[in-house]
Structures are given as structure tokens and as C-alpha cells.
Length: 385
Ligand SMILES: O=c1ccn([C@@H]2O[C@H](COP(=O)(O)OP(=O)(O)O[C@H]3OC[C@@H](O)[C@H](O)[C@H]3O)[C@@H](O)[C@H]2O)c(=O)[nH]1
Image (cartoon, rainbow, N blue to C red; front, top):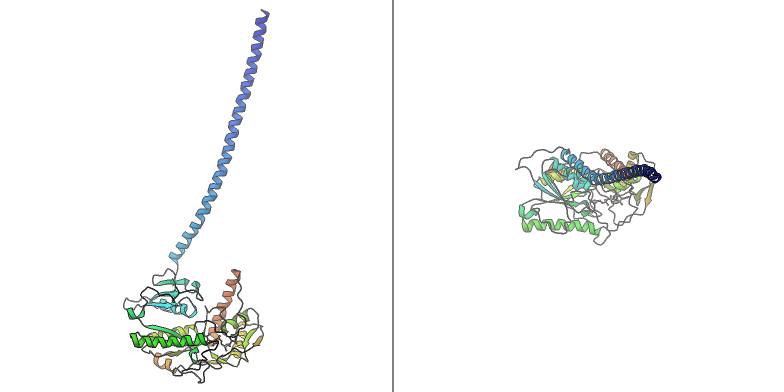
């Protein structure tokens, strides 16, 4: 009897304990399930965040590409004339991304022609023609013409006219002043300028031989000193050197006494002359230049004043075989092409100065500040007219 009571008491206590234990176990289970749930959520959320940022990494450049594409679709090109099929020409410009070439490209595009620019980008820059990229009349080919170019550019096959951009350098250090087209020149064939000068002279020779032999029509422009926006900053020419030096407060480097003379034409005048020559019947060489002659020292002072610079003028040693006088006789161009330069020197210089100022800002923002080329003795540098 006593044992039965005791047993009941024990089992009652055990049942309560069991219930308690069961309760605790249940709580522990719920807690652990909850913990796992919370843990998994945070892992999941973390994972989702990582995936989202990965997606973002991939998608952002794509979005940027889409924005660029949208921009290019809506890009405004400079105004282009409409030309009928019969008036529209297909024109190939070698060096069309360079200084003179890109201005010629602009003119021909705006006149409504189809222009293919071929450039090896040694001195030319895509920026000079980027405003045409995507235009239906424009094509840009990165190519060096020392390799054959297998497109229809071949003048003989398609009956195209060929223009040679020759230079006043064919007259060398001239003994005739001003220089007329029938003057044969005074070039030192083994001097530091010979590669450029003789190279252009032989280019003329080959053009006329080609004309005689193959019947290809040629036009030869003897281009005198030319300046304007898009000139190469670092090619060591006097205009780019003086403007950069004046803008950067560095001495303007005059080679020799500065009494040597040059006559400078603004690039838009030259381009109009080139187009007039191409449209003319004149197959013999034609001078294209501005006959307003100045000494280099006068020129240094003028640029210094226009920039408003406090730079000094520094005299350095004379360059070997430097032509002492140069000024074009442009009677032939006036008479046969009805062409003459119209842009006044100061107006052109102000435009060039504005361009160089902007370029310096652009370069500074891109962490590259060009220096004018240090004074150099002319040592057969490779240059383009
Ligand atoms: O920093 C300079 C640079 C040049 N000069 C002088 O300025 C004059 C002009 O020199 P540039 O180098 O600008 O031009 P150049 O007249 O020698 O050749 C030019 O001629 C016709 C074109 O075909 C050539 O491409 C062009 O460079 C030279 O007398 C030269 O000695 C300076 O006094 N200081």
C-alpha cells in the first residue's frame, strides 16, 4: 500500500519532470529552428546583396554602352549639303586626320561629298575627325600607305584626279624672291632638311611621270607655311612653339637673329585653295600661301602680345640650311583659280591661340602637360606639309 502510494508519487513527479523536460526540449528545438532560419535569412540576404552587386558590375558598362549608342544615334553632325549622285564625289584623303587633312575633310564633308580618311595616326588624331564618325558619308581607315590599300582608291582604275600636297620647301633656301612656280629651287641635297625637301621634290617628279605614262590627272599644290587649330602641339614648328611658350610663360625661342622671313596663311584659306585647284584645269604646280611676309622676330613679338604673355624672347643658334627668305608669288593662283587668302594674320592667330589654350586645359585634365619642343638644330625631322 505504502509502496503503491510512493510509486504514484514518483511517477507523478516524473510526469511533471518529463513534461518540463519535453517543454524545454520543444523550446530548444523552436529556438534552434528559429536560429537557423534567421541565419539562413542573413546568409540569403548577404548572398542576394553579393549577386546584386555582381549584376550591377556587369550591367553598368552595358548601360554606359547603351547611353553612348543613344548619343551617337542622336549626335548632331555639322551641317552637310545635299548633293545629287552625279555631283557627289567619292574622295580619299591620306592623312585626313592630321592638321590640314582634317580641315579638308570638314570642307568636303560639308560640301556633301563622300570622304574616306586613311591615316596611320602617327601625327594625325582621331579627335580631329571624331565629329564625323558614324556619318553615312564618312569612313575612317587606320592604315599606313606604305602598304597597298585594296579599295577603289586607285586613281588610275577609277579615273580619279590626284592631288599632291607639295611644299614651298621644294624651293630650298631660295635665291629668287618671292618664289614663282617656275623657279627650280635651291636645295642642299645632303643637308639636314634634304629628306623632307627632296622627298617632296621626287613626289612631284613621280606625279608628273605618272601623269605622262598613265594619263592620270594630277594637281600639285606647293603649300607655304600654314597654321591654325589642330596643328600638332609638339612638332617643333614656329607657330606651335611660340604659342605654347607664350601660354606657358616660357621664353620664345628664336633661332638665329630672327631676321629670316616667312609668310603665314590660315588653314581655311589653304583648304579653299586646294578645292579650287582640284576643280580647275591647272595640272602644273601652283603656290598656295599668304604673301604677307614677316620676320620671325616680328612674329614672336606679335604672338607674345596677342597671348598677353610676359615671356622673354630668347635667341638660340641658327638652324642649318634654314631658308632666309620665303614669300609666295600667288599671281598664278589668283589668275587661274580666282583664289587668294582672305583671313587676316591676327584673326587667324587668335583662333589658333584659343585652340591651344583649350588643348592645354584638356591635357591638364588628362594629366599630361606638353612642353614645347626644346630648341633643336634642324636634323632632317620627318614632317608633313
Ligand atoms: O621655335 C622655333 C621654331 C622655328 N623657328 C624659325 O621659324 C622659321 C619657320 O620654321 P618652321 O619650322 O615653322 O617652318 P619652316 O619654314 O622651316 O618649314 C615649313 O615650310 C613649309 C612646310 O612645308 C613645312 O612643313 C613647314 O614646316 C624658321 O626660320 C625657323 O628657324 C624659330 O625661330 N623658333
